[in-house]
Image (tube, rainbow, N blue to C red):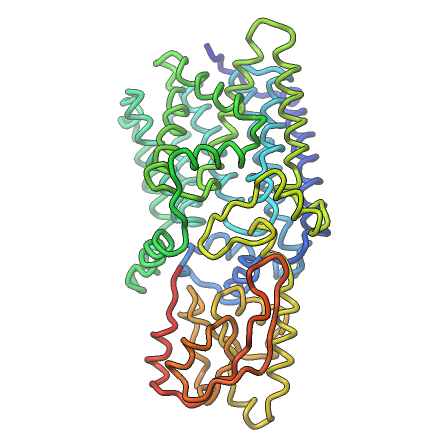
Length: 505
């Protein structure tokens, strides 16, 4: 049976040291040797230059934090990758604290934390700026809070859960899935008394209040984010079989730690009913079931649920008889973690990384059209500045009079974001992709379009004259010798054109 354990400085010293180590590894590799800006980071930088209470594909919390970081430190890789590395360090610390709460000794703390450190998917999520790193941190903050709430019978902590849940949903809409599954798990474990607590309902009201600004934004924009999520499911994500979903979970979390999270599931389901701790076993089972039913090709969707499993599994193994068990488990997790480290951390030259990724089979095609020489989370960090330079050269080559009436149109937010970021406003940029669609159609610059990332055939349905004026290429992606087109002579009105290129996915 798990014993309640209050923290002391001595007990949290080891998690603190290891969290600092993880921060140093993450930040050192990604801030100074991170290959380059990831495609989503370029888009988020564009979002941060337009602060709002909502965006088509995400709520505002992570963007407002990014805006603050830019104001304080600038928009370099070293600046914007500080927060995700810190979120990773915080998650490592929380994992150790959770293991301590379950009565784990130093060995259990080490094993659970090294499992987190060796998780390729978590290395990726904490390696660049996005709302995903914050999601993992916030969820595990809720996990630790609920554990303390259950063990020490402190229902007032539901208020803190509500605060964290509200921030989580204001950070990422799908965080609501974690919250709903938490409540469902409470019902499944017959912890009905929790719903009788006024503090749970107060926490729910606080969460709703935090989310309110984004809800008002959605109302003003006709719930446009629902269209984005629907399109992403149909057009972006690849369907995966149940076996593929399970295999991807094993690969993404490090095959050497599979025994640990399976032990974690067993650990929770063997807890006495009155402790309420079975909810964490049910949470994982339900989340994994959702992935299987949704045929999701995105193993990162439930990555936040693993640290508590690692902690539970480590505590279970620590208490088994046999001196060899813990050393063998720790050795397995560490050795395989090191072997899979380059799958999540940019530590290899790209050419070697390509061979390595092929050899160990970690180039999954998780999105349609994303198969390439490198995993997408690395491939989309290369050559954005070269794309900008190609577009700038094509733009500069236009006659001065025509250039004044020309706007660059990016097919995807990555194209538009790269040109915006590296051009620093030297070129007017528009796009119909996600929130760019809401930001305007060129402010009347509709005489000519410099189109980036489009097929000639689709442009010729809109313009009378489509002429290739340049090309760009990006290594390690499927964008090779992609033409840049100068388009003139609209066949349709600008508003109809804008609706035609609307693209939410």
